[in-house]
Image (cartoon, rainbow, N blue to C red; front, side, top):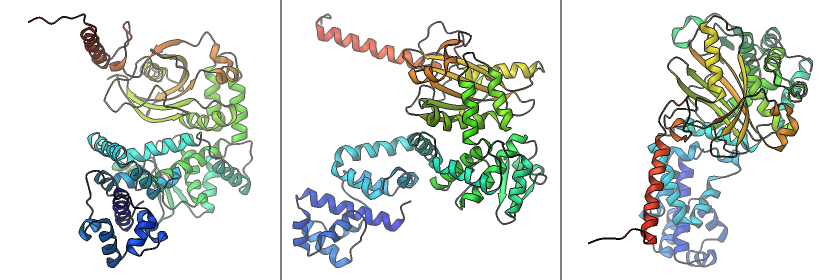
Length: 501
């Protein structure tokens, strides 16, 4: 995070560098004119030092700029977008250090090509304002990028979870139960309260809250054993890893910093690694992926073995598949939706190795109703309406994306958001079908797995015979109109159309 003092130093250094370069002065020449050392000038330009008044006057005289201009927060039109960036919340939302960057290094890059870069920065700021990009939204996007850079596998957290198991005598061959996790918390002086939170109306949507003052983990009513296990393991992670900048509720109400969001992710990762030990989980996954026939029961069996939710199991797959199976072209989606009103929303997503075709669309468009993620929710709702719902619906589909070569094996698990609710939730993992996947997962070729041509949203889809379409292809029509316009211009250029008059 850039403090106010750092921001003032960066802006001052930015102006000095721009003026020096504009006058064609080298460091040596500016040093001779001002009497300031080369290292001191360098520290000024990189925002490490802010000179006293007499030195500012000397710099102003050498650079042909007055004192007021140098110390103000305003600059030329070319530099102003960078200064606006430095003074904006946007720059403090960027977790520079986690991507190996410093603000000074980035600003150095900006000032080397100011015309193009400042125009780009100005565009970014306008986009963030126009689309009301929140700091929390930016943090989440940055976290997903950070996960992608690491192939969503964090060896230090895996080792920490293994170390914790050893220290506390948890066998590698088992997933710790609720009683064991509660006992481990009690040994840290933390009690678990399952009564009080459920009686507060405004907290009905919050699964847990940790009171650091009372040293109590409050759990809400109606949680499954699997959900409780995760929340208990996650709190153990916060304690063991020693994170102080952290959320205290399950649902992050307000992300004060990227560090908080990152620590929450690491604690959740630790919890999953604790409940689904790496070596054991890899062996279980191997048995499934080596099958030649699709068996939906296999995926529910693995959830039952570790007593975890489908989402936890799917998220764990995104850690394990790239590292241990070489399957790193994948995406994860969590959708929620009401199958009665036919409205759906992507509430979580992760893309590894590239930006894959299905993604959250911020334009209020209709996601493709051919997605297995949506159909599995519909099937779960149908079973519930007939009072035949017994367990989550697991389905697979090979999705061929319209007008592309991209094919994915998509595995989706859907269930009601709560008992008796019309709102459904599904989690889907999509694996790009390429040589590595075909070699590792022979079940991809199972003829019983349906193959469907899909798209991302109805508004951008040109499939003409789609019976599932939820909206007209307005974006495709706009594109066709543009192509027609260009053809008309080509005719003019080619002399096919003659002017009269």
